Amino acid sequence: MELDAEVSLDPERQRQARRYSSQRRAIALAELAIAGVYLGGLILAGETNRLRDAAVGLTGGRVASIALFFLVIWAGYLIISLPLGIVSGWMLPRRYGMSVQTFGQWCVDWLKGETIAIVIGAAMIEVVYALLLATPAYWWLVAGVLYLAFVVGMANLAPILLLPLFYKLTPLDLPNLEERLETLAREARVRVRGVFRMNLSAKTTAANAALMGLGNTRRVVLGDTLLDNYSSDEIAVVFAHELGHHVHGDVPRLIGTQAVATVVGLYLANIALSWGAANLGYRGIADVADLPLLILILGVVSAATAPLLNGLSRKMERAADWYALSLTQMPGAFISTMTRLANQNLAEYQPAPWVEVLFYDHPSIANRVRLAQRFAHERGVAQ
Image 1 (cartoon, rainbow, N blue to C red):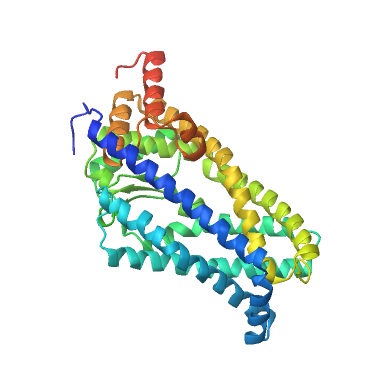
Image 2 (cartoon, rainbow, N blue to C red):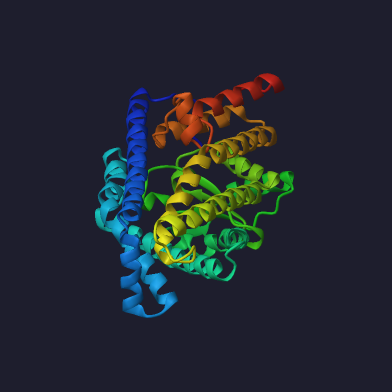
């Protein structure tokens, strides 16, 4: 579909975007506070020791008692956080026209996500406590290495195993557009295993695209909300941006950086668990009663390092934007794409600098537009 590239920012949509963004941030911070109070309350009240004794009494075995303990802790948090989860996940997007799901449809997706998280989380906790028992001095380092292997494995498998549980993926089936995108991939010397259409419109009105997978599962996924509402020039720019991530090796770089942050978090957790064993009545660091303390420390480290990781991500996104501009030589299409995305996705065009630094893993729309304008000026290319 060829659309008029002259697109202007919608003032009313921007007013809504500012409200939507601030409300989402407030809810996210509230959810973090609830998690911290919940875990801290369990630790300070000594409830984890009693819960551990009850789990051991009911199951009789270490593996089963760890699993039961984890499930009870998880269930407790789900109960107290579910109201905010409904507001942030369903009510707020519906209020602002970003979601088209019924409450029942949202609940099905929520149950799928929680089931996957519980299964993966329980398996990871069992491995961690096996390491705590077997190698108490270096468990954090071994766990970090295993985490890296897990993330690499998930990066390979998620596009073919997990994503189809939530979205229908089909071949692009647009011959002219496919030929154009294949030409861009050849020019970039990137072998993409496929370009797929994802039925985002079944759940949301937002447009999106993503680079997914590693090796044989590496692919570019374009939402139907993008394909059906943007010109071929605009889609080509988006595709070129994803090629930039391929060329720069951004997925492995992000995985490696996250692994380093995880190892740091696990090392600090090791110190905290030793302190807990000495001061909170735990039966050593391999006592499952210290699980809330372990989760709390990892959560604090994750929150503290998030701005740094977001900064790295923004740097990668800027490089991918510049690559897309260099490959396509279409700053005008890039700018119109960014403007459409700001209008369609309720993306705040120019958030406060502190908001962008703390919360954004992509540059703001305004900064991305300025980058394209700078490119056009430096290269002498018409906008």
